[in-house]
Length: 142
Image 1 (cartoon, rainbow, N blue to C red):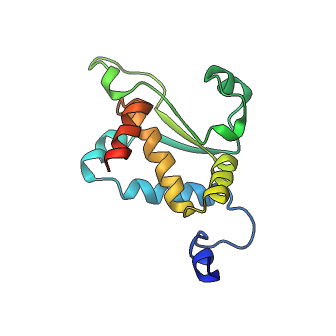
Image 2: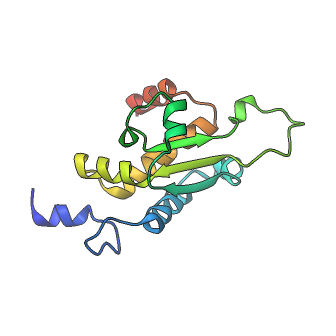
């Protein structure tokens, strides 16, 4: 691998340390801006958060043993399960877990912006009611 290609994978503004939560949030916002316009009204209220790791309670609820195994989480009621008269709940939330994303970035050599976008879109897929199997099938077809 040439030095140039390795440098191309670094996020804009990278200074030698791991990108912080603000940098990942900026990447997530940029990824949202690339979504087709038809999705915008449906994802406008989704809150994006960046945390270092999932907490023990979240990991236990998902039957995940190691915090490095969870890069993102959707919390909310999928659009396919909502009623027209439903109101007053907490906003839907997508949490991206910074350290596991950075570990995957290092291990795979993918562009960090692409990886953040991939995790974000996967979690937003849950907002639209897609299962993990549905999303893997769509990725395989693409």
